[in-house]
Image (cartoon, rainbow, N blue to C red; front, side):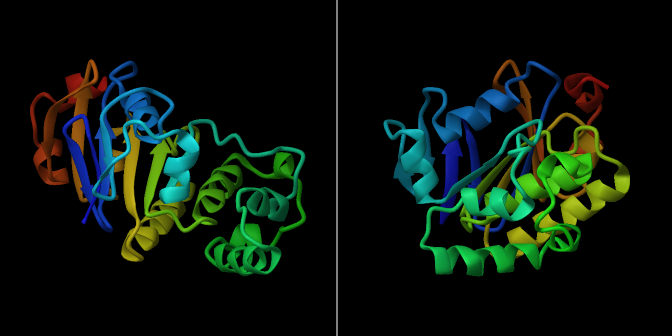
Length: 215
């Protein structure tokens, strides 16, 4: 099953696709189009959803981790996670336990206020919050921004695990080598259009990659 088709980009079940490009290339705009914040032709899960609002797309199984984490700073880790899930209390609790099991650093501090967490822990919380609803398609916008290499490694491990469970992942990232380390395929945007695509090895060996992604 095709999980997504938009702007010439398609994603299959369990696939991680890195969307690369310099600042202003259209990476965020692509994610916002898929989610419904911007108008555009989008097919999700083999259905044309171009006319559907954001809420409907989310209910169909789209998760989103925006740039900058945007966790609820005054809420605890557990409250952040539960706030993202509209299911009955008993199921929310099951989902909470399930997600915390994936993130030991968060499981150790479920009652800590989000503003007390490190930047890396806040990014993990943002990802955990998206996973609370067991998304079929997960959109991530520059998730590694400001993170130490060890934290990025932990984040990539969670993305691989999510993909292994069948979640399709669209990862917008400026740092090509970093994103291609976790992706099964990459696409390079310029002015909102896909100008290169291929396997990580193909893209990393392409002579124009550095100029297109900004370094």
